[in-house]
Image (cartoon, rainbow, N blue to C red; front, top):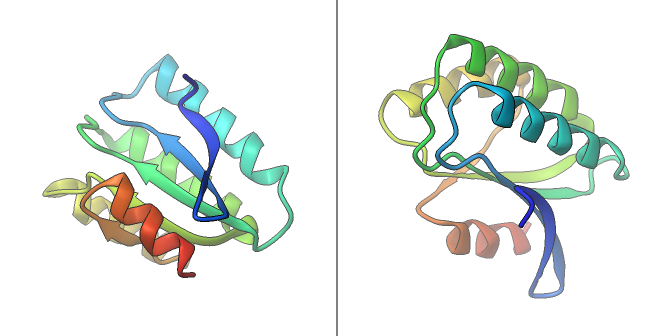
Length: 120
């Protein structure tokens, strides 16, 4: 199953961006590129997205890549939720939010994230 895919939930189309258990490297970079291409192929202000960071092992290179990714995709995102953000990763998310000018709803799991997104 692809790490980047659209699913239907309560009649809404939601993009799942599954970065769970990745560390910086080829699979992370490939997933980021696929997500970017998928998002930018959508109409502006239309994408409901779940970014799953469960178990991610991050470093500064990863944070910088995600900052650029988030900022560049901003025109296409209607609402986004994140899953699996704890501890230092939460601090990084705050920095990404400030850099990109976007806010993110932090949820306990994908199900909660999708429930929140369908209300947006």
